[in-house]
Image 1 (cartoon, rainbow, N blue to C red):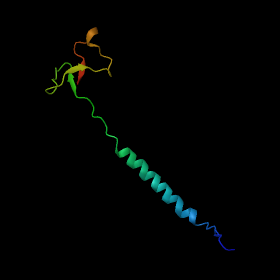
Image 2: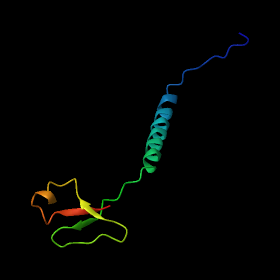
Image 3: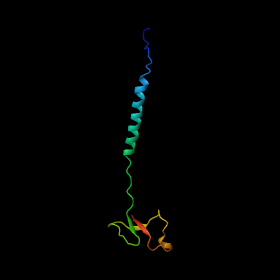
Length: 81
């Protein structure tokens, strides 16, 4: 048979190829996660201690809490923005 390549099935080839594929997939997933930068948590301010924000930032109400400075929460903590 001229011009035809004869493929021989090697049952051991799948055993060595699968770990390589898994390792490649794990490496790709790891590298995709490396680009993400976690945002730092906002700096707390205000509250009963009247903590000030750094220069150039203003203390605003923290939307993540249930304390409302407009409804009797005079000592509500805030976040610097």
